[in-house]
Amino acid sequence: MKKRTTIKTLIIISLVFTIGVCLFVQLEFARNKDTILTKLHVLALNDNNISVDFNPEINSESIIIKDQSGTIIYKNGELVENLHNEYGHVVFSFYTNDTLFAQAGHFKRNWWFTHDYQIQIEKENGDYKINLDINGPEKFQDDFIKYIKESENDSLQYSSYRTNGELINKWIEKK
Image (cartoon, rainbow, N blue to C red; front, side, top):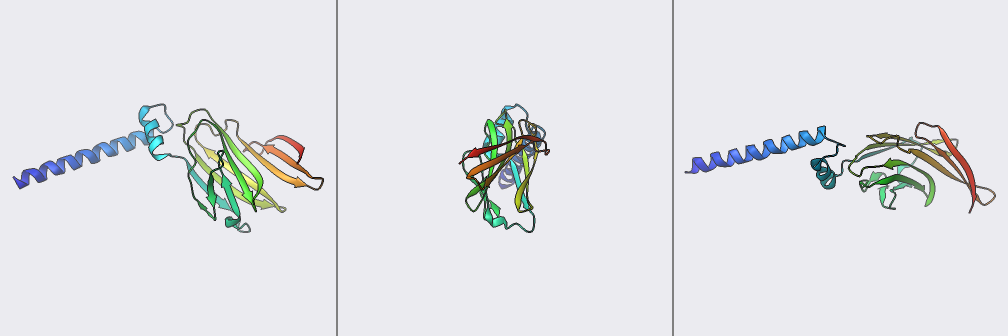
C-alpha cells in the first residue's frame, strides 16, 4: 500500500514538473506574441528587464530614475521597482540632486510586449549623456532621448534625439 502511494506521488510530481517545463518553454518562444498564455505570463511575472550602468566618474547613488507614472524604479545605486507593462509611452525620467536632466523612452502599442532596456549614463564636458538600448518588438517606435538644461537667462534648453543619436528638435522655454 505504501509503495503504491509513493509511486502515485512520484507520477504526480513528474507530471506537474513536465507541464511546468512545457509552459515555460512555450512562453519563452511565445514572448511578445498575442496569446492568452503570454498575457497571463506578463501579468504574473512582468518580463521587462532593466540594467543601468555608469561611467566610473558618476556616483550611481546620486541618480534617480522614475517611470512615466512617477514611480521610482532606480535609486541609491539599485533597481527598486520593475517597469510596469502598459500601453503608450514608456518614459524614463533621470534626476540628480532633485533636478530633471533627461528623459528617454519609446511608444508601446501592446501592453503584453516586453522589452530589455539597457541604460548607460555618462558624463561629457560636465553634462550627462544617456544611451538607451531597447531590445524588443517596438524598440524604434517613437524612440527618444530628451535633455533638459538650465540656462543663465532663466530658461530651459531642450534638445531631443532618437536613440540612434539623430537630432529631432531643439527649443528653449521660459521657466
